[in-house]
Image (tube, rainbow, N blue to C red; front, side):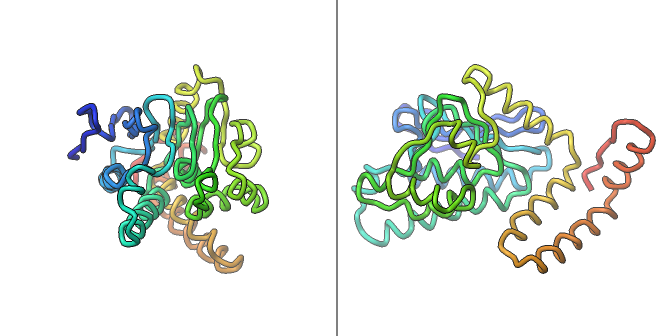
Length: 266
């Protein structure tokens, strides 16, 4: 993957693979890892490559420097005030956010610092999120006269609508513990334990059948947008197709034999 450079001639987005886990690190620390057009293009290219990489079982998304992600690049937005640019920017951001749910691998947000506006949206659109106890979250566009409409899509699908709307109209921060109570993050740990906790969660997923994870993730997001009856029909079909896979046969045989399964990935 070709990497665009930030102002310090370092790659704007870093990728490191190890033990079935691909870690993507937003690397614009001086800009608090804001989502410029170039950054979004890099992220889209990265997740497209990962989606077809069978060696990758889990994706961890993190940020360098003090912040996880401070949202869109306001300087870039002010430089290009024309409507066409703004429309293209938010379409591009939406495209990336959707890809996080569409790729077969679960995506874990590793949140060590602030996640604001589209950065908070990014947390909400990852499948899972682990936060340090010092992390803070806000959809703060309203403070500069810009309602965080697109972050509101992900936020309202993670927490209660009144809780989400309050954040959207006040721009107030919530801490990591409150983010966990509201359903925005799964786990909260001290900062010095963050990497270990992310590694534990990733390893738990890597240990499972890749075909079951792939089929399950696809079904999970599709059924959320369906009525109850249609959701059950699709879920039943998914389970039936999963049950005839080699991995399911191996898993059941291993359970009966009281041994660890050896997944074939099909």
